Image (cartoon, rainbow, N blue to C red; front, side, top):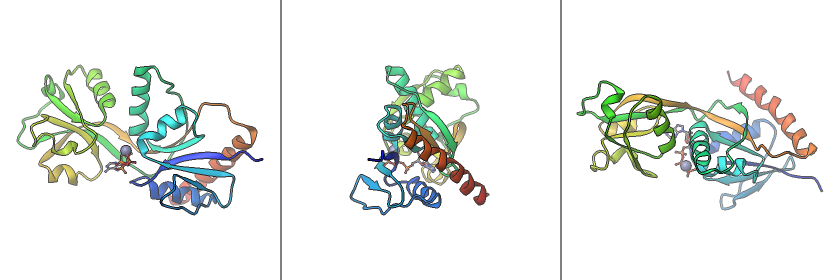
Length: 223
Ligand code: ATP
Ligand code: ZN
């Protein structure tokens, strides 16, 4: 029996369409049943695992799947978190992907005076990225308190839960709509293709070796 290569992608969200389109452009075809977690390729011995993006780094780091397509923001946050608690946090970066571009930024309410990062000393910052945020603050000698939320970060200041936020920004429209002003970019991100550190069978490695130049070709053609 041929071993099947497993690839984790985001089930539904900002990375889903382009992740599938990239594989498709590489000749790896899928017919997706929305209700299913797994999709078998109709062209290759490859299975897709469609999960929440937050689960992708851990699945790769634990060797549960062979490859993953995920935003560097989530990847680095999960890596820091797993490192902190002593879980396996290794992976092989294979290729930066030309989608999912965004930045993780600190923003404050329009009326809040803000001149420099140290103005945040002693303040509360709402974020879904506590590890990336604390690393940045620490590197810059600032001490602020994390208010950890899993969503609706942008309404936290108005709700009196925090003095500032740290959230993903692409156009800035969401910040604007919530009366917030972007002050400091702490992390720039795009999607990335990563591989598990577990040793792979020669068949699986051969499939990856065949996939990578195709990805390069597809990305070059788009430039
Ligand atoms: P899931 O249900 O899979 O957890 P989600 O709500 O966490 O979904 P999305 O909003 O779909 O995630 O974003 C997925 C990824 O897309 C982000 O982690 C980031 O890498 C990228 N991204 C690109 N632009 C943006 C943006 N403007 N806001 C948020 N994420 C963005
Ligand atoms: Zn998510």
